[in-house]
Image (cartoon, rainbow, N blue to C red; front, side, top):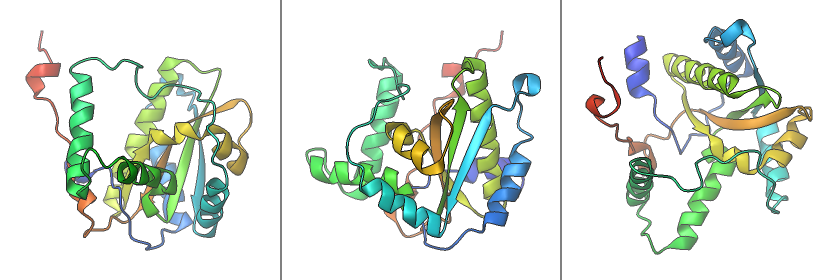
Length: 217
């Protein structure tokens, strides 16, 4: 698989098979992904992997913690402006249409959103943390290492879903993985093999035309 194919076939997978993924495979992918660009070579990412039996323990641990937690950052601006708001709204409506969940069925929509905090059934997952003292430029390093990991995962036939929704549970995740107080949870990532029969995995998000966001000066 070349890079272009990996980019074209990487999608946010939201339903996984229970096929196991070995720690050795994830370890190899992480080692390769660490070659992603990093300003000043500070390599600010700190990764915690949960897999197999640990994943089951984590799901049980999280299910017992239902109180809201203090957030470290907002995933989106509080008043998301256009055209970004419409892009986000359309993605959600396209997804719920594939799932057959109408707009007025709030209970089913909330139930589906809760699947985020189960890694969508993936057998493995990881959490990406950053030192709280780092600045915005180092956050971009996180994105680059995560994208590199996701493309490498496609090379070996794995699927992923990067999940900023885990920022809703920073205290629980930090406690479970034993991260230091100096670390801040940025996101999680589901890792596994996509369920080819689940309708949600037919979702392909739109992209703006090049003319909208690029200018050749």
